[in-house]
Image 1 (spheres, rainbow, N blue to C red):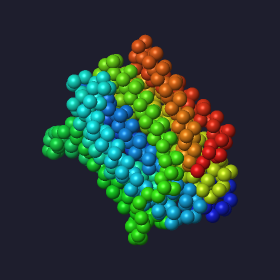
Image 2 (image 1 turned 135 degrees about the horizontal axis):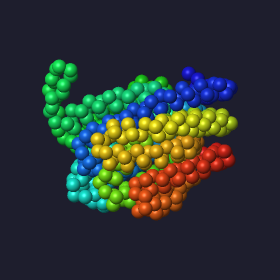
Image 3 (image 1 turned 45 degrees about the vertical axis):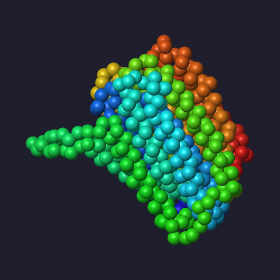
Image 4 (image 1 turned 45 degrees about the horizontal axis):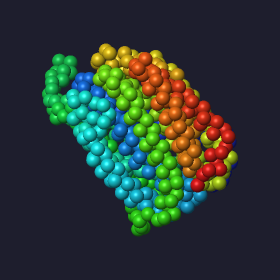
Amino acid sequence: MQIERIRTGEKLTLGQQLKLTAQLSWPAMMAQLSSIMMQYIDASMVGRLGADDSASVGLVSTSLWLFWGVCSAVTMGFSVQVAHSIGAGDHVRARNILRQGITACLLISIAVAAIGAAIASPLPHWLGGGEAVCSKATLYFLVFVLALPLLTMNYLGGGMLRCAGNMKVPGGLNVMMCVLDVIFNFMLIFPTRQLSLGSLSVTMPGAGLGVLGAALGTVGAEIVTAGAMMWYLCYRQKDMAIGHERGSFRPTREVLRKAMRVSAPMTLEHAVICGAQIAVTVIVAPLGVMAIAANAFAVTAESICYMPGYGIGDAATTLVGQSYGAKRLDLAKRFGYITVGLGMLTMTVMGLVMYICAPWVMELMSPVGEIVNLGVQSLRIEAFAEPMFAASIVAYGVMIGVGDTIIPAAMNFGSIWLVRLPLAALLAPQMGLAGVWLAMCIELSFRGAIFLWRLFSGAWLKKGL
């Protein structure tokens, strides 16, 4: 495979670099797209239950991102070390890091799940939810946080495979997860009902669990995928399979120290950003149930634009990480420029598509006219920020690849707390939900500009592991 040329020191032409970037980015984008399709499916199905059910999911969604993101960030500290070890040709060390990562990530995710379970009941009230939505929001939140240790294995398995250069298996398994999500949700959310297929009438069994069914369906799909992901990584992945050999799963001080150096800033940064997103939810809550639901649906809808950027960012982490591990700093820098450029081009196109298709997308999410109108207005504001949002997403992936996380985390933190939140609080009373999304558009453009500045300065290459 072309990526092996990084490790062997072979020269790569510009055409080969572009081809390799495309080879790794395409499966990663498909994996991210399948994840987004799951969110679309959940939002669309729950949206058919009514505004209160939609608002109950939207109220706690940003809080769930906080818990998911903390666990995901923890896994990255081990995945980046694996990329560096494979780039240096040290596969024994890569396998040792995998074993230690499994133990550490399980222990940390259990602790995070316990915290989530402890706050599940009061959380919707803290966020300003009304009595009509709080009980369902608590149940939805609780199902996901209790499943966090297993979901974390999905993040770890996918991250390790991608950093080893295998984008196809995580991509394919994520597509499978999307299909399972449709099946499970269809059976769990709605009650038993009659479906008409032309002249035929078919009885479709269903559990009728509503919001709880949406949570159980998605968690079930993710757990099945996590099992398949870890099985392939541990038994089939070349140079990484640990299932047929003995080794210690006890974390060592050196591996934990390096993992903490990567993960701690990412975890803190994600917690701070999600804290800001929760604060935005608090700003939106007084605008009413329709605004809460529209905001949640618009956030889900917009994700179709930026998730390709995260897919390219995953590819950037692998390419830059292996180049850095192989001590090919010029190649790492070139891959940084190529992936950021590709991300900006892709998300510009996606932003244009979203601007045009916003009404149809929102109608897919909800049949309620007021929710649709508010969501369309928000999405069309946000479309203008997509190119610069891409710059921040992919450049961050580039910097993670070398282990530079402290300053990028501070940049993300400063941008969202010093720009987005003050602007949202200022504009929401005058402009409603549109003001919140205008603040987001301005902030994302600013964030992209400062990440481009750091990328071209080259300072990130001097701050790696």
